[in-house]
Image 1 (cartoon, helix red, strand yellow):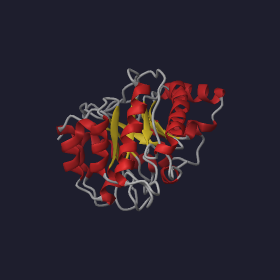
Image 2 (spheres, one colour; image 1 turned 45 degrees about the horizontal axis):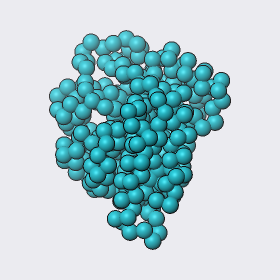
Image 3 (cartoon, rainbow, N blue to C red; image 1 turned 180 degrees about the vertical axis):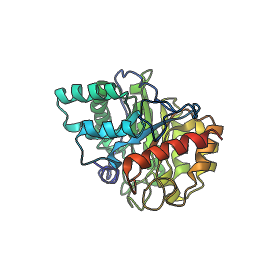
Image 4 (cartoon, rainbow, N blue to C red; image 1 turned 90 degrees about the horizontal axis):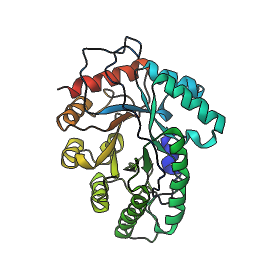
Length: 308
């Protein structure tokens, strides 16, 4: 499932989060050059506060899953984010893929794929059931973060009522993850990708997180969607960095790698370093050339820019 299909599949649904005990993901290995094997450290790169991952739906889709992980490691990454890939895995495949990622030093840091959104109060229980089911999967793959979508605008429901539904649904979900090693991540989607999506506004998303007021509920700040929806990326980041739990990276237009469009990611990475942002950023773009080389370059660029 790709991200566009995933966001559109949430038409009129709601989302919440429940949790079982999930082991915290291991830290990402950083400091690898794009011209050396991924296990060989590049001593010229100092540690940066943030960790770097890949949203797997964007790359290597024609390869078997284990080979996709090998390509990720070849590009120097050691964290992967999933969107529904696990839905058809057998027990044997869970064991096989967990073994493979362990061999490569890869963690699954975030997953997505819930069928209901948090913005529709009429499907609140279905949303919570979705999350409970997903969290059983998360336990199997030791994944500590779950993406939550608002779903589409609900006909007949006022904007304030839908906003309140997002807040209440996330509060219910927070009760289910209380004290567990799990973070819920509420994501923005632009209206060009899904003209019916409710939570396109970054300021409103931060307001929702503020009203939920729970340390295990944060915002997935997708810069690609945010740029299309209004920009002002760094200002919103500076004002709200403590509410951000994950950042997604792609350039506008085209959803290709940084440097192909209008977003100045070098300055964004510098700002993340200055703000001591210490959670994940994830490359979620379609490489416009050799995926391994482009992903390796994107990672090195982020690490170097964050050093200031």
